[in-house]
Image (cartoon, rainbow, N blue to C red; front, side):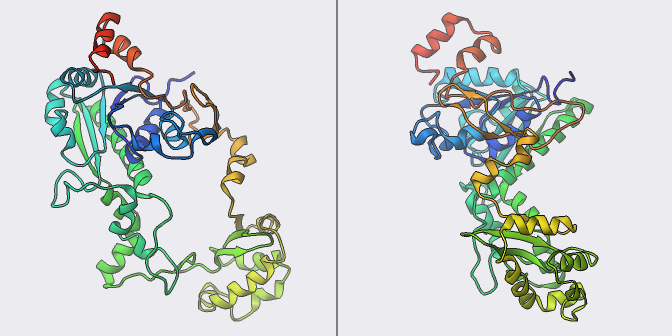
Length: 404
């Protein structure tokens, strides 16, 4: 079997909450050895967030934490202790990448800034994923993902006509920043492989959020306009939206992108003559009469289930699919058939279904190797196997509160 893409790469992971762990989870999926540095004195926020297995709280029972830390190890270090700081530096000396997503300057205050770490290991790659970047007037500010949507302008584009700006529904800035961070680390590893040079990556979660709304930025910079909020509609395509179906709160998504799909759609809803209706014959006409078009489609979809609408439209080559619930997603036959979900036995909560690796490589295996770790479960192993400490030294550290 071919080795995993990042086989042999070690990451000293000081991240917490969501953005940072989401980044390092992607690298763990690719085969990197990710060693999370945690502490009981400032527990990762996500260890305290629901849902908890069986409704019972606990630092190792959070589905949130256990999802985004699959494939990693956990070392408990009280970094307020000089001895723990020395252990952390020794870990850096054996690593290829250091990751963190605290506010700008926090790692420097801890004695683990890039200037210090590159003296320990000159070719180290360090990525900082702060809210606003390491420089700039807002760099010292603390930030969390939910703030990134309104600050980036994404909320101004989200919502329905006549409504105020709306949140996007979840902490979009976190996973978006995490994916950008993982990609940046891969680029830095490729650069180091060619040149032998490490580097410091200064990622701003705000900027990665702005980067996904290029059309909104360009509308202003090119034409001095602000794009209106249009709900589920598209600036050009029609129909484009969610349509109510039979059943309680059941909906189906329908999109027509090309002109040759419109006659097929009309065939699928058993109204072939509609293809020539002057109100809807072209994309421009459908867009101009979108309210009437949506009403017409809703009259049809409300007579059927979302699954029936999907079958009929997919059969004629029109994009349609139900808006599924979390339960339906977790039980989806297609995702299960592709092996997307994983159920590794967690040491405290047992086997639980988690989202796995969202890609398949033809020649290099990528899979979730282990469940998320309990807090500090790998401390002794890492200190002995990776850092070379003896059993007696580790016991002495523990007795002095260094490993907590």
